Image 1: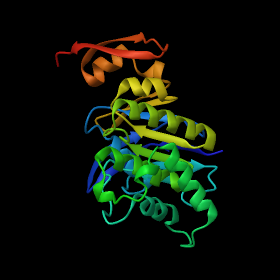
Image 2: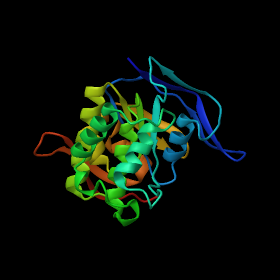
Image 3: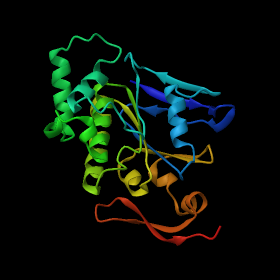
Length: 251
């Protein structure tokens, strides 16, 4: 079973250390981990360090992975080659670094992912003709097509309507459980994090402020200190914890 652990991890942009000293307990197969924090806190930078796009001190420890490409990364920027169709772009992502021969398994998996994300109807539409939300769904399909052990998703639902946000996050939680993946999602919606995440990591000013279960991490005190808001945490009709914002704190 795959496990991911960060040990004193930092990340450089040029010569400047933007993220530093992030140490987590092991993240396990089947878990969805929400990474939260204010804008420019370092969430995207941390993801790029985990994938190896950025360099820095510390160790990103991946254990138990048998996949050639253990980590799949979905960045915020979903721009792509506009002349490709949706299906072609997913197939290209699937075959990256592999034989270009298309197997029955390739076709079956891509069809399964497209059906699950409800994008079959746009399979042969050019990427350049898609809306922002549709491009996000295609990016999710591309990342899943690689069958990674670890998926890093940087604000994957930011362009989706509320119904599709809930659909996609529920789908990704089920994917983590059924495929034995670790899914890390950078997200701003704290209520979605409370509802879908098994663990929450809080990043502030390039440092990890907290890591643990949603109930332990998302507290009134954390919201006041990190987000500078006055809020309550109450149960919603579905018995999930829910953040209710009363106002902003005075800095």
